Image (cartoon, rainbow, N blue to C red; front, top):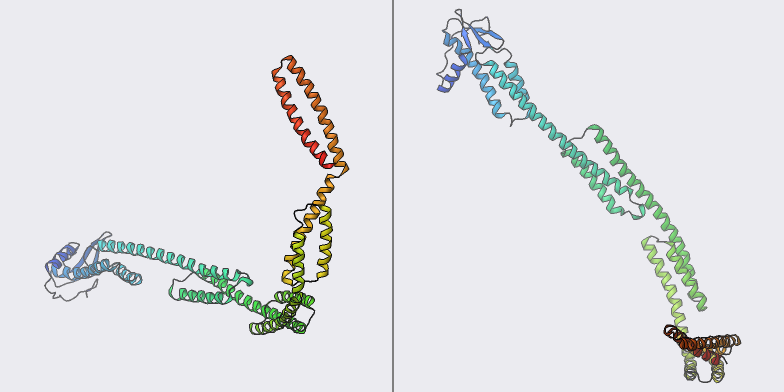
Length: 438
């Protein structure tokens, strides 16, 4: 190829197309050839020699360097079409090569125009890089938020109180979160080192804290269950010792106490707890079955006593309503003496028959209270004093009424008549009370 200051043999170009001929003519307008074959090109900075082509006419000399220009122009045009499709790195490399080729190319044509087009491509690539950087930043922000959410969920799991922790489900969820973390690392955008390290430390700390808390919880639970097992074994031994007791009341209370201790002891290991409970229930059932059998025999013995007391209840309830308090009290005392002598009744009937007798006894006591109230000297004295006061008040009102009528004071007459009627009603009520007290 021709170089500045050197000569080259005449080329034999192929016949150009009409479009290429037009492009070549446009490019050739930017150059000239000296008589000695030196080829020049015009640029904004002035003319520049691009080479020497002696022994050829002007069109041939220019044609060689115009084709150089057209090659460069084709490369720029191709990049203009493909810039948005090819990777940024490939575009950068291509632009760098074009930029270098256009510094001082041995070509004739609108080199400044080509440089301007390359500059435009560089600006477009910069915009594309900025957009890609913004997309990467948004993706990193989204990834950071997603990773942070994973860490915060892990921390919330660890903050759950041990007594309320669902350990199996929580452990499974932490393993799922770890897989999510790994997938985010493998397939998601990379975080900056500071955030990556900080979040991983938090996540790792949460997992370690969970493992430590789980070990501690189950160690303490095992210790508690061992203690519960020991306490329940002691309870079962006591229950089995009491199973043959015939001290029904005391032993029944002892079994209730043992049951309270059983509940307070907590759970032993499942299989052992079930076995101990079976022994406890067997001992308890044996005792209460014996007590029930003994109670049934006793109830049969007490059935005759029940018939006696039911007859006494009919006799007592026949006293109501009371007609003569003295006779009723005497009759009730006789019934109570025979009641005590009749003895016990079956347990299921105790409350029923006792309640009926207490109702008759209460009726007699109420009648006694009313009789005492009527004969109380203080009550009678208060009633008689009230009678005297009311009689004096009525006498005064009657005198005032007579005077008002004589004076023709209709309003006063009306008021005095109302007051007099009220006092007379009070007097009738108080006299009745005094009569009752007498």
